[in-house]
Image 1 (tube, one colour):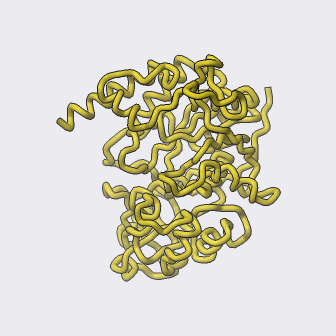
Image 2: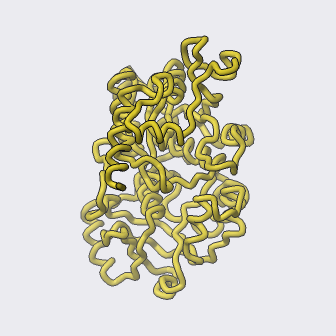
Image 3: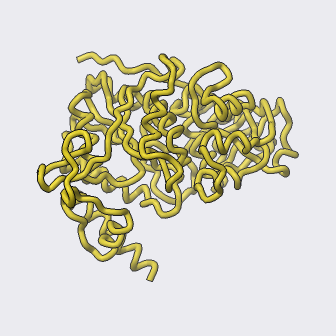
Length: 396
């Protein structure tokens, strides 16, 4: 069976990972270069650039691209790109850099990750970044707070990446599932898939998520469950726990031959509509032809309208993006229908549908109780109960 996958954004996959010979040369050179220690977000962005997930970006953005992204959601050449990948630095680091020179990029654990060509150093203009990207400058917004805490200068330039795997960082790297865009494309081709629906998640999959995934599976050759395992906000369920949940639900409730699990090592911005566009473009690079966009995708608090992340796709120009957004209404279990429904498929009846707040779910888990089976699969609930009770015990 042959397959023809969607093209990468910009036409071809970027690969900024150097070979071992080049890596040795860069390691030697880096010993005499100025050093930049990357934040968690910057390290995530570096990996996404290196493996081609952020194609067509080849490095941290320069000023013309930064301004074009923030004001018009486009690179300087007109290519659609919604959120800038920036390398922010403080005054003391800026003083060590020379435009036209190079700098060594290190992980916070000390690992040398890459060398950057310092092509530009320019002022970090938050006055265009915050309202442009986040639609707010409120420091209570986690993405805004992150930008406000960054340095006042931005370094733009091409990166030459030695490794994206820190040597000493604690925690799970998810090596088995950390597939690059080239690798997911190869996997889809090997399975004979031409159309692939991608599901973005930073939470365990509950029954409503499962319903969206299976609707997508009905119209596509395969499904890519693609959880984000980069930096998230405080309070989110840890990535290793979420991965156990994904493995569990796939084992019990999905067809293995039609389902692929991989991780996306990106950092969350919680930028709502713009981040929905970014997530779709990234999945196009991974080989997905369709992208599931639910209500309040990548949102936080009340900063965005319920369906803003869907409606923004209607503002794009023809040819901007090849991925087809699958726009879903909120879904829930209906007692009367005896199944999952949405506002499009079943009338809303008083007291009929099962809705649980995140606070209520967390309280049940902490007490060792499964949420209703209409809300969460029991096998997934058990994974979360084990985590919640262990967390509560450790805190007491």
